[in-house]
Image (cartoon, rainbow, N blue to C red; front, side):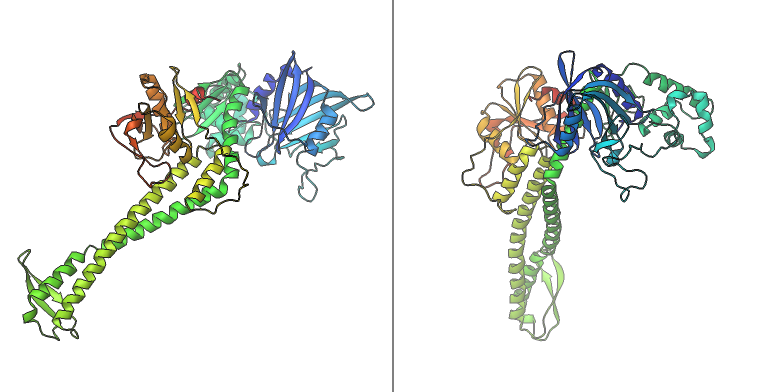
Length: 565
């Protein structure tokens, strides 16, 4: 994503108001995240510093984190040297994704000391280092020894060395005309050349420069370069871009002219990143906790899909059972013409008026040959009946695991155990050992409030779906589900909702379905009294009638505004 050097520059600018603020508290809620609470203008501000390999970043956050009772050693070291200190400077190094925060503090005997936090935003190589006034390392999130890194050592007591320099040019130090000497137009791939030559550029911004002109030449590049760089110097406009066709998402601090069909503006860069990374962080935590569950569901889907293919092939082979019965009848009708030892008999098919040649076993009598065909007919008839039953069961299992697969895309960490328990109850997984004193869990439905003030409830797993549809909702409430697509049950708790509420409920139904990233998703809706759960059916399965259908395109940000936290 686009947390590049230019974005880092804007972020550092937005944090300058923290200078002269006092560090009130330091917490480490997660293994790769530090929260520095800075008291400024009679208000506490949570500065989040993360070195997560996928979500490395720095910004203010309003999110409430649960802190461990016993703080990690890294947090203790930072507390010892920084708590109570005054932030003296926040600066970016060049146009790189490196930020230094100077702090003036007191040691144990009251002497003034100077410390610097250094955040290195480098993907999986990101690090957070604390150094003293002589640039000696006090502590680092990641320790790098001479044996593990040939370029530098990050260990307490060693002098801090910067990451290997790439010798790129700071784009703010030159003009578009001066940029020409770094570009070879004969080599093509201008966006890639810009990325390789200039410090802090990401593919997002280089593609933006190239997109400003139809062709990149020595005449058009300087103007495009200067225009984009001038826009980056203007006030930040926190914005989220999404292309529904490709599913690509990007955030930035300015409007991009690239081909996006949806944009959302935010009040600040911090609100933008809080929204963006909170959703992805939740998905990452779910992925880690439910990784084995996702694999199991995918394996079961693959198993039942293969089984269905084989059953259908077998079913195809039972289609000649009627021919076996016909041969038995014709042999019986013409038994007087057949002698033992005949290889075949030609008889008139009295159903079609055509002659049929029937193979015979020469070692068997005519009567036994007829009985063999009748026996094969009965065998195929029984097999066809069993295959029809097995095919229905297999299709039911496929639909069930497709619904579980869809639910895994939207569940929270708290919902994972519900799905595990459900699969165990259905006999697909081994039952987990549970305490005999474990209290019965209350079912928590996801709640939304429509623009017109109506409550909309969503079931995010089958247990919630069954509870919502069969117990929570009243018979006149409207029930929503995607048409022929695995998805959640959605109910409006109002007997007479507005058109706006109906459309928003349909949008939620589309979003919480397997087609959630698509547009114009068909959604059926009907009153609860027309929704029925067949006896013995699997969790979450229902039938319904008297439905109407409308088409919905999910809008993530609108959905978030409706969500009850």
